[in-house]
Image 1 (cartoon, rainbow, N blue to C red):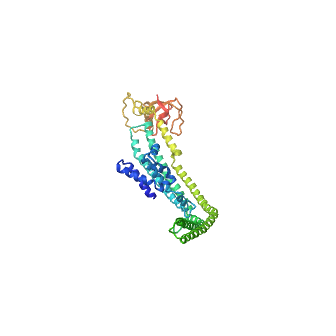
Image 2 (cartoon, rainbow, N blue to C red):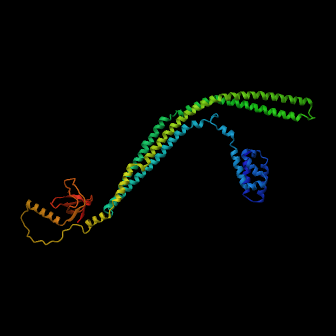
Image 3 (cartoon, one colour):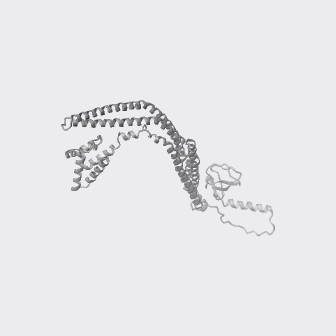
Length: 463
């Protein structure tokens, strides 16, 4: 009946969307039919039935069209199909309904497999990203080194590449942590927690299944006995009801003989006695079931609490596993990442136009050292072999010529030489730069006393 009712209502619903004469006649026919359907007399459909089968004035006051009323009735019939009996049959206390609780063990085992697989894929993503960072840095390093940029700008660009190398190492470590630490931890716990049986399933599931089954077995027997007693009582009651109807029909009917009426009365009395006898049996069985219910509930709850405790342990472990994964993936709180980006930021902030322009001036501009033309006397070449002393004297003359052609610089800061081949000076002290800055930022200079050595290029300025 419910299926037919829903089909008819859907037909009315669709017909209301087509405003023609044929559809209107179909609507009127179904409205008349619905006024006699017992299914519409349920509490869930009462208001909808009143609107659907009531006078047009009622629908007008409620400002509902037949189209909208049909929607209401369709939803009411859908909800009416799930009655108290269906809810009772799905109850945990009914026989066999504990299987969903038992199945949690297998579900948790499968969930562990899925979690490991999921984050193994994430580890592959981290590994691929680390590899791409490394390849990108390797590809661009020689190009950046050979670029036309110089000074602090070049160092800043190079810092991006060195930062990528460090981040590549970091993401490689994240990949290793997800696989070897988090994945292995879950696998180890899974092996220790779930004990597989030879023929399939898990020992934990079997223990809970056995416990619930043992607790429900006497209860199921009592319920079966109760259902049998109830059916017998309802059958006897129906038989008595039919006998009373025959008796009422026979009374006052002149066509039925007195003897026949007396026999009908006897059948009614026997049916009533049988009904009372079956009722007493039914009430007795129901009393036994009611008396056994507290014990049954206690045994079932005891097994259920054990399964809840196992589930609580699983939830707690997986929570810690997820927190560990989060700790490995959360690079926002990683000190190594902070150090990489802090260094990169400091390098970018150290870009100085004045320093770069001064370097260019001294390396490729007017600040470059040179030997200005000087008057030189002609001296005849000596044909005798040069001795060691003459070679040393010539070297001293060459050093003095380099000193004369150098650039005068002034120290901006104090510097104490760390090695024997480094100069030491105070801020404001002047000396001569005799060689240009090398790739590592060092220049060669000569103090006024003749001492020669290396010093940081950014510690001085040209006078």
